[in-house]
Length: 111
Image (cartoon, helix red, strand yellow):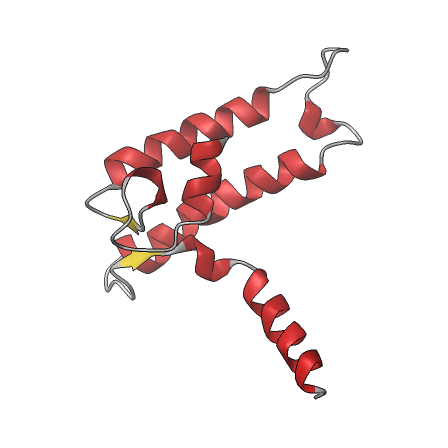
């Protein structure tokens, strides 16, 4: 899960390992990991044997599954497909935290 958080929170092209930006050159590292993480999360069962993503407590698990699929789709659309719009992805930039921080700052300024 730590590696998954690192990929979904990648902030710099110059970081190492899973914290690095998603690039074509490093795709052999992060893409298989995302596939494995997706399959693992999808297959988690509760004590009753029911798939967790099908229970009432599914929110966090479904959230990870959607984030993984979205990350792969964004990379394909923005970096892999020609003409490429971008050379790499920093997943941190897709976080809602930026909007939240902006709104907090506006509130601090009394706007």
